[in-house]
Image (tube, rainbow, N blue to C red; front, side, top):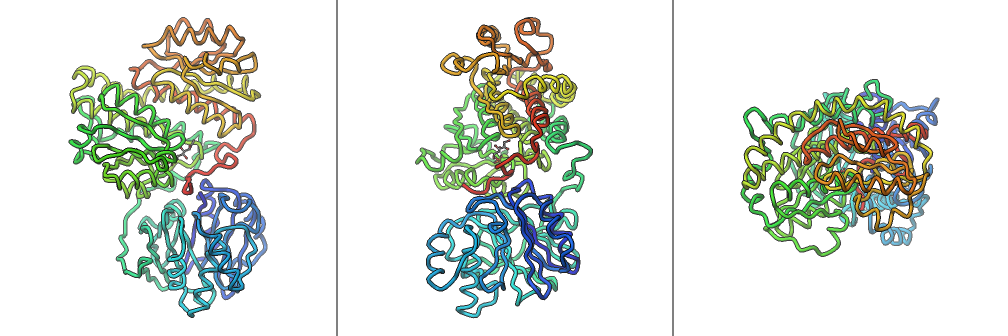
Length: 612
Ligand code: F6R
């Protein structure tokens, strides 16, 4: 949700900024812009992708060793050149980039207009840069003090970087509820919304905390103070990230690369946490809270989108295996509905990015109410990872395709290990069943590898249904959340309307939609309700629907009824989601490619949703 990059040092800033923007483009691609400081303050910005900006600046003077850059996901004001960042003060002295939302911008704007400020854009961000200018003018303050005073008046979320033409050897950065990372180079500094634009130059980083302001100078000085004017010592950390993780590595799209990485990412998630030979599961990040979790009244899972679907699978897993009641909540609903949460509850936040604003707010509320908060997150050092009482990383590596794939299977892998560990400790499953499931977990990466070989068959089926305008996904039990996830994947990247339903619910409404133009994707691997799901398929066929069934290898029945079947390797029912989701990821990928959609950057979306 908007990407921020900045540089100060001895190198040319523009190439660093533009490369950084390309890496951050997954956070928003409505417009892109840079401001470069070299005696003059030159701002270049363009509606559209970073490529448009690159074309626009061709032949222009880009010489500068200090600069800021931004890629936008529009909130206030349509995506156009004027609303693009950076935004400048009325006197043209200050330039600012911002990720977040200034909630009280309307009030501030009215006050500033009374003071004679005029605004050119429709953005909340422009109000902030004028407010800084106002403080600077009124009290002749240095830029960092003017920023501090302005931020005291601001309600909302922000990560900002500010440049002042009259103080050209300095960048000022600040954050509240939106991420910001400072990279420390040999004799220079880099700033990013995350580490991806920085990692090429340094792995030494400082994660800024909420309400901290960093002042960075060309001569190598980094100072951090709070908005309340208290000095903080920068805490330098090392990021483990290889540059290859940020490249497509020969694949056409990041999404395809990430689908194919899953045998490895699932194995990485289990490494050191599960051992079949010795028969144990151990999640280090929660061990010290183990007693509290196994004796909890209830586990509440808060998440959004695909992560919410992983949460639904956890509800089946934890209730089935560990017999602890679980509620799965949309974080955006949980935070505003006056929920009953007590210190006997455990609140698990699931988030790939670790930055989702609603999930973060749900956690804050839960902590206030005394619950133990537990974050299951992919991005190392992210806000949720740092906020929660306990945590586990899923170790999927950077996920760049906007549609989540490997992070989903990482979350489900982690949650399966959690359910197994709780079940073992609570004695709610037999030792032999525990051992059977642990053994089978170790087989999952190889089974995913094998499953990926059905790709050509899925590509063929994609060709058969690519022109559909609607699709229905049906699943029962552990496969119901997979039906929801399959439908979400299809709609977000191919713009085909799709719905996921519990298979048995179909006859309570959606069956009215079925005709020969409606592909119905049925996940039919369940052993426990096999006959029921076969009946559901018959009901669809009786109404001329086209059925694509995901079945267990060797299934002899469904192939005779369905139009197409895709086989997945046999596994224990609680582990099925880790396999059954893979063909659905591939199906939506191929359909989107055939429809010439931008698979990695679907319209209107952004990877990390840091606003409400
Ligand atoms: C869908 C997708 C989104 C995210 C959602 C939550 O493919 O990626 O639905 O799952 O925005 O994001 P995180 O997991 O970062 O909190």
